[in-house]
Amino acid sequence: MKRLSPPQTPRETEHEPKTPVVQPVVQPVVQPVVTSQPIHELPKGELYKNLKKLNSFKKVKRGYKLEQQRDLFISDLKQLFLHIKPSDHQFDTEILVELLNAVEEYVIYGSKQERDESKALIVSELMLPFFGENEQILSSFISTVSSRVKKSNMFKRVCKQLFRFFF
Image (cartoon, rainbow, N blue to C red; front, side, top):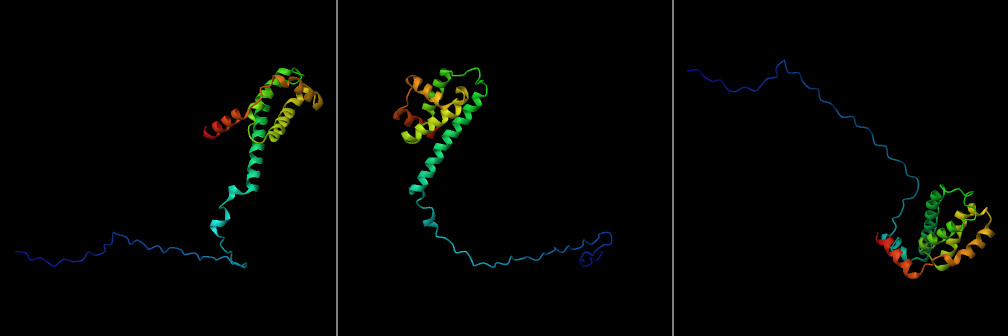
């Protein structure tokens, strides 16, 4: 019988190359030099706690809403009026009545005075090219056709506000 030799540890053979160990390159961390005094943390609860209750915030929000309402309506109707030539429809009361009805239905935010100012600005900006850039002629035509305009009431405005809020 043959005698078994004790197990030997595997030797590195010449056909297996050694893998070199890669040392990671460590870059020094540069700390910025702060020359000013440290900032103290502000109390979190007092800064924005009652923002909606501030009168100034309410005024700013209301003014922004009125301005956006007016600007959006004017930009949309200017795109529609690009297809209508003012020279072909000089002093056209039908376009004026339709615009006044649309403005009456669209402008729903603000007090009566703010809505009236907004409506007057919208109508004057959009209809002046159709009335020879003369505001006196435009205002006389508006007073003439005002009986054909469907006035908005509070119920309609509240329903539209709720519809815009939910949908």
